[in-house]
Image (cartoon, rainbow, N blue to C red; front, side):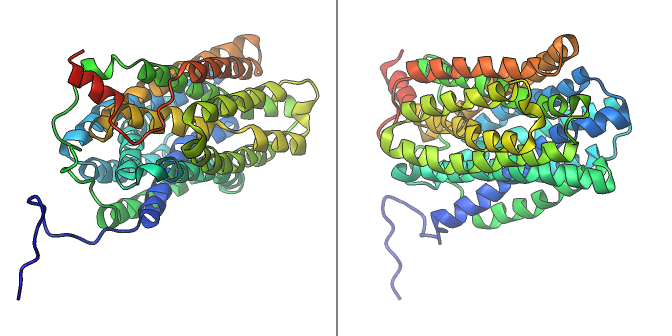
Length: 418
């Protein structure tokens, strides 16, 4: 019996699951992450009533998740560059699933605040590492398609199914049941990742000597992604956190009506996550970013037109066609940073853009939106979100095109000793 020949000292070949199977497992996992994260936003009217919360406190609940998410995404994303992806991701998914259920046991603002902060800490690694795993399993020509597919489930679960499921459960069984139900899938999917998803190869330079921060921070493109990420999450959370309060103000719409409107937004975002990143594989990242940001401007802007906020079917239609945020998220926060940094430093680059998105946009945005809503009315945060899209358009316009399969910008900077 002959022994198989090994090339270049490689270990014996193992079964590699198809890209589609890996993408499906990671897509379901990311969908669970966003379902756990965003469920709280759709329960705002119920939390205000049951726990006597203010608009500012609703904003703070979203902000503390972002604070935990930002710090842990950077730390654990970089750690996964050195130790491996799955050893970071699998425990994180189990922990955040348990914490999501714990939020349903809260009986005060402080208890809920602590539960949501810890959930953000546990979820932060999930975003960066899920995307890094998918990038590692993708051919360069399919990078946008695969990452867009994974991201689309974030919209499908978090923004389409989430608001309908959360409001219907809250109406029938109380808001605590929505938190309990959002915790169930994460543990099963953690097991699926452990058994099915392959760890990216170390031989290609991935997970080897970490890239220096000085090289990472000298990339103008990465700073534009940071700015785009910050503006995107400001837009996203100013709308998702305060549109339910704005639309139910004065009793013109019921929370369940708002659930359907936001569900339509999620369905539109799911389709956009499939279309825009795939198109960017052919047309380029810049055109995809600019066109998506222009459409995103109309989501909060049209909701502010007097008389429209009582027309639920029309608002649902508007939300369906203008919810391009998920495409912007995958472009600004995943595809372009990975192409800038290269596979070796992808975890660190994803964590870096998450600081802009999470620590600044998703932390300061809801807190500022809550203060603006308390002082100027519930429509003020939506106006702030519309202004954020103008920054995204500018960032996309200034961005250098990154659609290529060659060496990374950061690797070139490091090699030049800059």
